[in-house]
Amino acid sequence: MKKPQKPTSLIEKAQMKTLFTFLFLTVLFIACQEKDLEDNCQTMGLNPVYSVEEFKWNYVVQFPRNYSGRGLHQDGLFQPKFDKFSPSGIHFYYYFPCGLDCHLYFGRELPTPLPEEVEYSARENPIYDETLDQRIDFCLDDDLHMVLYFSKTGFDRAKLFMKEEGAFKEALTIKLNGNRIYKVIEILETIKRKN
Image 1 (cartoon, rainbow, N blue to C red):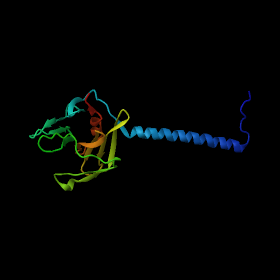
Image 2 (cartoon, rainbow, N blue to C red):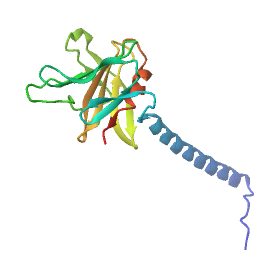
Image 3 (cartoon, rainbow, N blue to C red):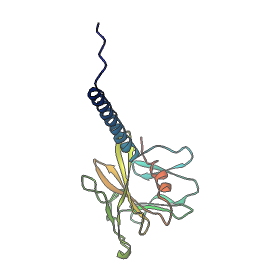
Image 4 (cartoon, helix red, strand yellow):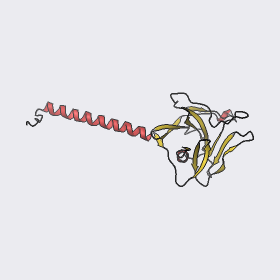
């Protein structure tokens, strides 16, 4: 059996170095792309320290024990509402009014493909309207499950959209009140469909 010959000329050595460099950079590029995809999607799971609460008819969420508010409840027309507050002033809420004998747990639907930003409309006062131009994705079993839009500047508002019946629908509004977004992420990661 013949042994492979080693490259002898300088040109052959340069060609081999170029080939190995190209292969190395290709593998490195692919690994970085996969890492970026993983880093861009927050993994969802339960927090053993937080308490479990009803979030929507088919979902639960977890909050630290020192959060207050009614959580999931019904208004005077028996429509679902959700309110939770942190001691530092973060406010999680939703309410999608729709008339008698109507029970909406989700609001507007996002177009596909998902936009890079969404508009926040402050019904109470249009002066607080703003563009939510930052986005965090949440994955469950390698599947995109939720998208959080927020703004690093402006009025500290965020909107959560959840995948429901094959579409991403408005699920929650969050007022940060000067708090950092990571506190919100820790809670949103715990949202789970009931068994």
